[in-house]
Image (cartoon, rainbow, N blue to C red; front, top):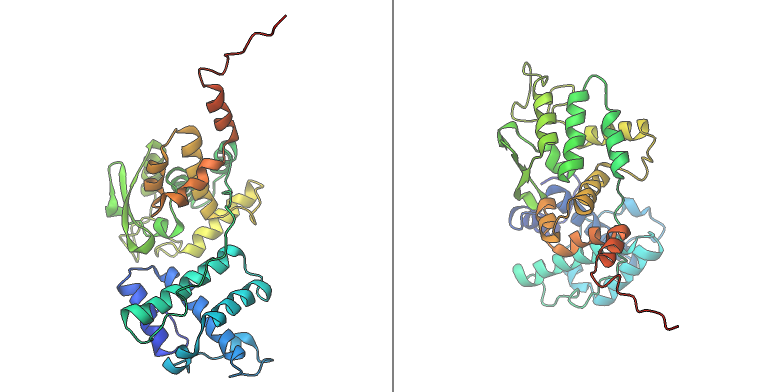
Amino acid sequence: MIFDEPMPLILEDFLNYLGTIKGKSQNTVKEYYYDLRTLFRFLKIRYRFVDRNMDFDSIPIDDIDEKFIDKITLQDLFAFISYSDIKRNNSNFAKARKVASIRSFFKYLHTIVKLVDTNPALNLETPKTDSRQPVYLTLDESKFLLDIIDGTYKERDYAIITLFLNCGLRISELISIDINKIKDDTLTVVGKGNKERTIYLNDACIDSINRYLSVRPTEGVKDKKALFLSKRKNRISVRAVQHLVKKYMEKASLDTEKYSPHKLRHTAATLMYKYGNVDIRALQKILGHESVSTTQIYTHIDDDRLRKAVKSNPLSNNKKDKKV
């Protein structure tokens, strides 16, 4: 178990099920835990099990049992989503994630382990989510970001940002890269849900990796398989990658509140779609999206491309002569 906090056995079993049977990543399991912990704390207040003035984050949940779970109704769940909206100022996306966590939990209890007779979340509706346009760097901004990389670890940092901008890697995938998983122009990474996927490397990626490997430490390395190492010669961490990306963003005078390693993934997808004439299904596979609907956000970002497509219609110049 990845949590040190005390929790009810019924929740611990569910989280173990997510990780071991469903193959969810640790980060996804954590999100489910945080959502359900918030739900239980809210319900303890709603049911008057604790004082309303008690600090919300201090409300214990380790006493939640099957009897408590049996009390939960659909009205309680709608009240929780309303609370998340009004009191916690959750976005529609955050509320939709909470609904997904709750549905999964009660489906597990009702259908898988049969601990409850009814599923109160069966008719719990998902809040409508507005489509979000991806935030990304322009081609010129991307080139400039690469150009300003320097310092003691410039070869490593250049390779990291090159892979982000060319391959659309998730940060978890980047730090998971092992040297022995690089074969010619392909790279195998561990993606979302612990699924392996193949990344194809272009010349810029191959060159940057080779330049980094020529200076990568070999003595005293604690994780010999890891491609990217920290200054302490451990596998580089998520936090370290976030820090170095922020450092170069600041140096390039880019808004660090707006851009992050994940926005570099958006940038890669945008550049491939905009300049590479990449089919949406191919882009889905490159990014490791389970559903093409997730990938489709990149088809709404290029007005110039749409304008050119309409103008390229062979009937575009077929104008009717004016009558004299």
